[in-house]
Length: 300
Image (cartoon, rainbow, N blue to C red):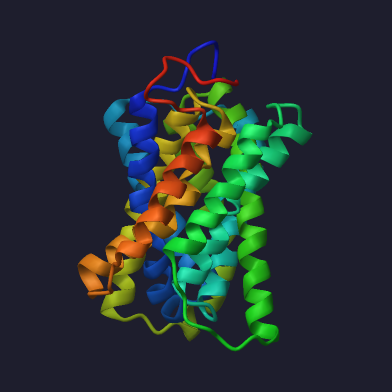
């Protein structure tokens, strides 16, 4: 609940829509990261996002944030863009995309714990139960083949967890930014700042890049859509719901990974996945407080 207003059906549907698009980003990262490298992929992704957001700024005639706020915008970009992008890109060189998607499901837990530590939200039994239920649902949904555990795999897994922590805690500061500024200018400024931060490492790694047609398409989609447009959408949504609720799509990302795999790659979907789907939906309801049968969530 924000400002006394319960989570509405449209909020819940927007979260599911975000999950569907973000779920496609992990296989795309898996395709693009070996071609561009972790730093290069992050740099091009942010640059494309900055372009589309700047274009939207011009079309909608919105003003850029005041120069005095750009240091805060840069810090926000480090937490919510630069660090998680580079970390997930690095992990994609080692881990299958499904592993990264599963580890990304820890984002809501870090968001809830961070919000509680910073005094933004109460740490409730319902929200913790939602996190636990979501992890169980994800485990049922995604059946990954075994991979050999070595130092590289462990480091890649830790990189995913660190990226998820950055997303979860960063969402709190995204929420604060939406209360002080309009979502679109903040989104555009964050990606411009991220592009500038990544400019030198991207240029330094350019000679080693080996882009393919598939990699170019992948980075274009995740740059324009899952980074630019979706960051703006998430910022708009954060004006109306708690930061911890806004991170709950992480539970749905593996579900949509299975769906996209079935539709486009012919991967099997079995009846045994249904309990996992139901658990994930229940987890989102617990974390967000959404209840379609009641006008208001039971807890703020």
